[in-house]
Image 1 (spheres, rainbow, N blue to C red):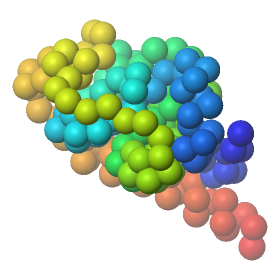
Image 2 (image 1 turned 180 degrees about the vertical axis):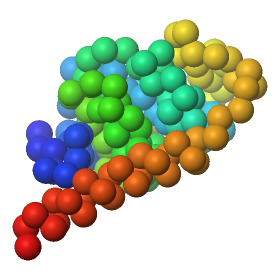
Image 3 (image 1 turned 90 degrees about the horizontal axis):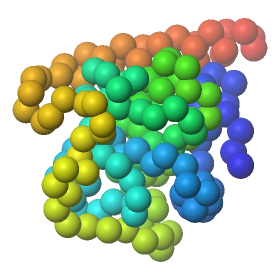
Length: 155
């Protein structure tokens, strides 16, 4: 299993490691938008768009290990930061996202998702707006600060 980098509170995994985690029954959270999720998704994943996750992470995630997925691994890295911020310890990011997952030949599902879109206790879509970019930018700033601190300590 890939170890977390010293400047990140989560582990980065490739599709092979992610597949092992999925087979073990880890919570798999896709943070893309509903139309992306409907096009192609990892079987067994649950859709919690990044904006919803950033608005109410405790209500959107179950306790325990979690694997985050997006299309390339960028939004899911932000989701990993949010999960770590609320105390989740075993947090994984699928590097390369669903694009890499598919390119390496792993299975995907497609089609309408209906009510699989919301996490239990989360507000219904359209129940309000989320300024996820602002929240995401804040998490990215935190991540960059950790990185800069780690780099400056090595000099």
